[in-house]
Length: 278
Ligand SMILES: [Zn+2]
Image 1: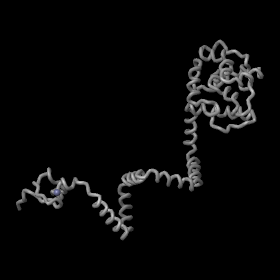
Image 2: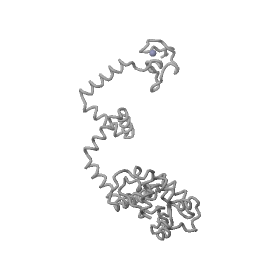
Image 3: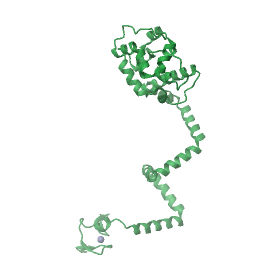
Image 4: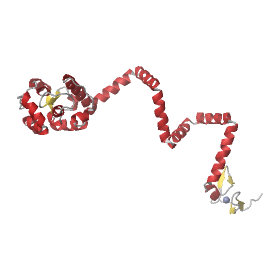
């Protein structure tokens, strides 16, 4: 049987040569419609009509389509997951809202699940906290927060606002400040061998609660420095104490020799308190 040289498109009714240039080959045969027609995007009305037809089919026999969907998920779980994520991203605001409402209504369930997860993996929990503790800023934050809480408690007050708003610096700024003042041999790995020292000791000033400017002054970066633990013990909260000659960092030396000036500049109130304390 001889084949015609041309083939008629079922859509545009044009006759086109039987070559791969004009037709797609499907299962060994050139299929209709032609390449150009297939590449055309369906019109909006066509899409609408198709959607309506699909919805009607689904309403007629939903179980059939649910079963089909289930089988497809089984066949290719990764594709199903991808489609699910795409669907959620289509209306991300709604997805977030649904999530928020669900977690609010299921707080107890979520907490119980988390508790069970932690109880089942104690090693994982331990290593998580151990690792976090190794991270400099977290560790610094623990040290500083505990110390601030203690000072405020001693002053008959309590920490009611975020640390940053009380002391005026962030943990990262404290870290950078300390690095500049480190003596040879000091590092964040051997904190404990050195302490976070208040150049003007906290016990040398009297403050009344967290909003007292004097509190902010003793906790200001200018008043914080790393000090070897043994020297800190020797210092014993004395204003007359001098930095031992073994300290060579010029920044650290000047911080201790100018210790009054830095704070006095900061607040006239501090000046009066220091006079009272001396
Ligand atoms: Zn065509």
